Image 1 (cartoon, rainbow, N blue to C red):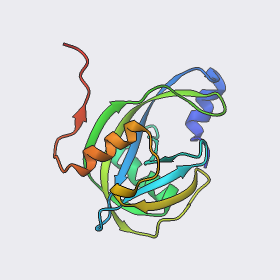
Image 2 (cartoon, rainbow, N blue to C red):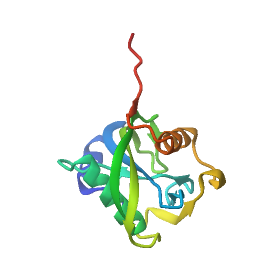
Image 3 (tube, rainbow, N blue to C red):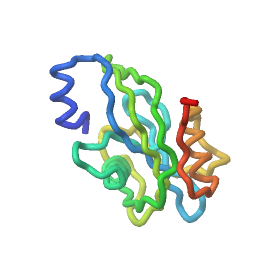
Length: 159
């Protein structure tokens, strides 16, 4: 799939300089309590299903679209888990981006998990006690989504 057309247009102007973008991440939990993860093609790491919100797109619609595009699984967002700013990310091609990341807990509705585009090397369901290696911030998102609290987490650094 590559990057969205609007982002390719921006990159043609700004090059690899840092961009501030809005993104979504999905903690998809099935009826057995397993979590859907994808192994990213850009860095080979396991991660939550995630992506960039298109201009004018609602965040909940974006998380549904990203799950469908990347895994073939149709989901229903159930609640907002976290609103956070990612660290600055540098991609293998040199592009740098920081995201306002909206993390949703979702439940699967239909579809079989599979690699459904060129952004993933593998996808699969994992029990929370048998996860592949994940970045700490993703483990925090998972823990919050699985904790069952209704309120969304957010950081407050101002007094």
